[in-house]
Image (cartoon, rainbow, N blue to C red; front, side, top):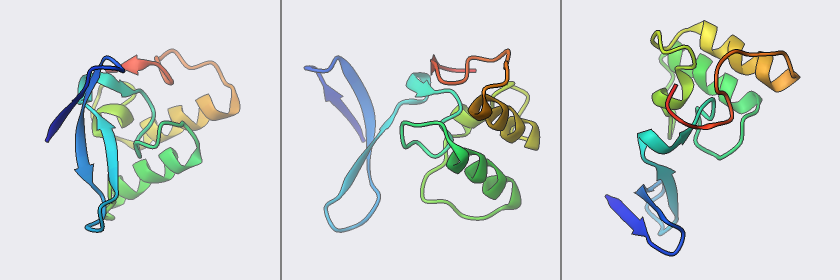
Length: 102
């Protein structure tokens, strides 16, 4: 379901993560943070783990392939490595941490 938040100037997909009335706002795919594979608004080792789990076929409650495909070549272990490099401060020639699409 698309939910508009006019006061904040955004619209987003709103999904229920649990059937107990808790909701999570997940940005539309053109508004994602590059590298934020698990959609929590931060880039950290949890995003690397999410990419690895997705590649291994392990089910995740939320995964944003448009955020995780850093180099635009399809999801691969290279995307996890690029996120790791970004986390430790290596220079990465991709817009990790920026809003948009890879």
